[in-house]
Image (cartoon, rainbow, N blue to C red; front, top):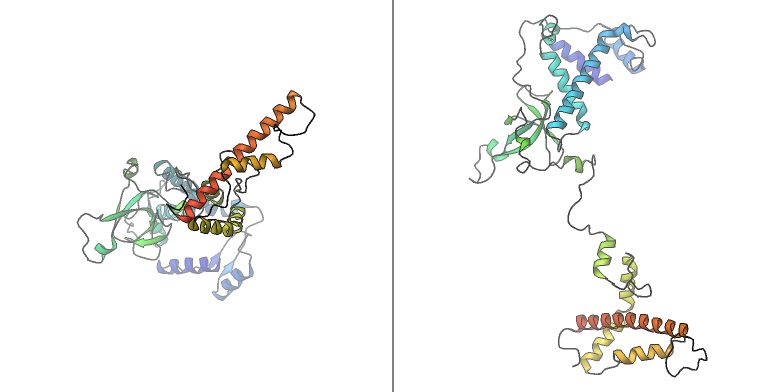
Length: 349
């Protein structure tokens, strides 16, 4: 509040106006800081009645005009360049709307408000005003400094116009980078007042400043999102989706790493056995027979069960087939791991 008061008084002083009295409402202007600063500057204050907005009707009318014009500029920008436009640019739109109102002729008498305030008959030039959010082409930094660049490189880059700079000359403008979201004053610029560049979508660079500033979420990509679950499923595929498998299929990467660390010693010993030419593991058929004989729930020819009903035979057959498929996948995976650890030519013939 105090900074705004000091800035307004400096601008009024540059126009030959001395502020001696304030007639505000009862919101922020009753703060002790504002009252003490007015007393130090020798200024008097009178307040409006509570909820009597008609007593400062000129200020309320100006606020409404600024809001309407800024909203129209934001909507127009979103229609013309929706990829880079955003309502979060509202403060810059309000500032540009205020500049336009101060520098253009009034409809009732044709006078310019800025000329009336400064008691001047000269009207400000309108050549420095451009549509809010229009594309601008900025000259490359090397060319601005008088250096040369490669013949086939671009001479300019596309940015967004946010209005004239309040701290520089009228020919310096505030430009938004659609890549980084940073605003900087620029002089060597060319304006596209009619948004003709935005009609060529295939040649326009993609705006990234809204994603980097967390205004909108990143668009979906055609490539896989390499998060923990995706990496786990890519490293450990299991078509049978066996819940008893030592490899976790639910996306728990920590469990997979833990199992790999526990089995690392066994895999190293197996690799040494292959190098020495000593086979210490049974073949595929012997492993299946051993597991089938050790399981009490699997029905085979030499068991001593007295229940020979067709349902029991069918259940035993289904259980045996399921175990066979599971062990086939596990033994095949173990043989593949041994080959990867020992290298080609190590497996026995």
